[in-house]
Length: 409
Image (cartoon, rainbow, N blue to C red; front, side, top):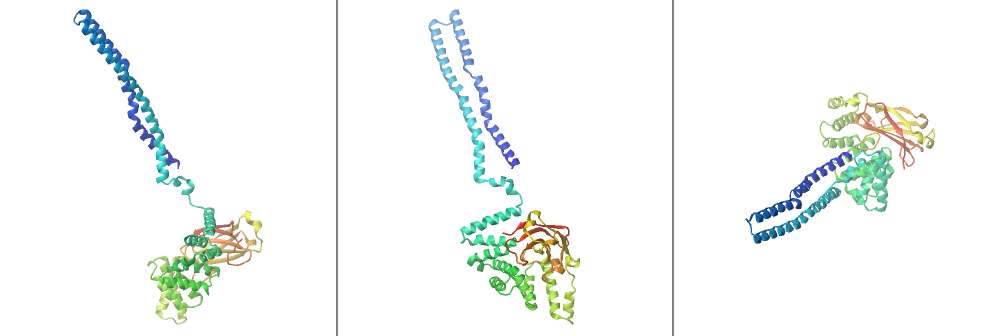
């Protein structure tokens, strides 16, 4: 902000200097034509008339007439001199008006047409988690006063989902109204929240919501992915492969998603074929796995508890340490379960701790590590749980630090 204000001040100063140049030169002109100079000229002319009269070259009558004419002109010039002397005062007032009005006018125009908020350093820095939580809290308070604002509920529901506040997210989705059932992506996000709260179980309402999303938009990527997961979980491998194949036609060829889908389809077909599979299936199953999986990718680090929250937990409270995809489904890719008495704890999350054999940590391009203390021992997040959110890292990262330092409202 300081640099911008300094640059603006310099520009205004240069503009004022250019505009005030004529006024700064005016006094010199006034001095050259001042009444004192004119009076000296008239004295010389009177003396010349007197000499002509004394020499006899000018009659007394002509002398008197010429002298009267000079005196009249002197009086006229004296009057004009008073007017000219007053002129610099008018110039000074004009210059003063420019000095005051130019900066004020420029500042006023910027306030109306510019972006004054951009000068605030707070507006240009990256928002912290506390900033985000305050914005979400303010939005929630505003929505309680204006419950008919469907767009506001959509923003609030997605914010809660991104923050893993799933009960609040479900409540916000329920308040969107008819708009929810007209948007396939919203329905898919809602179904994901319901399934995640049920620890990956799509039976009942979650699957009903996903199917409604596919009916609205048969090629919605998120809805197809959730439907494939639901089918695989209930051992309907044929339907899972069908969804994955449909999704494979949508994702960019050669992308990580495309590679993962190819592997999932090949492995599932091999599982469907069982012993004595055809050469084609066997060839598909021997394709090179993703680099992360081939390296036995894992994420390791340490989870600790903030000293300020130590009095709010008991040694036997359950601690969940999990990795989830920062984009897409909120379902954990890997989970480790310990007790508060084990903290600080050196964790390691890999494919052996996956919740679903077909959705492993090694299949993700990047993951976010989180930790949560549940006093009830439930895997479903609830009010009063203590949480910690770590950074987004790639599989294979180590020395990842996660501190449990917040309380869920």
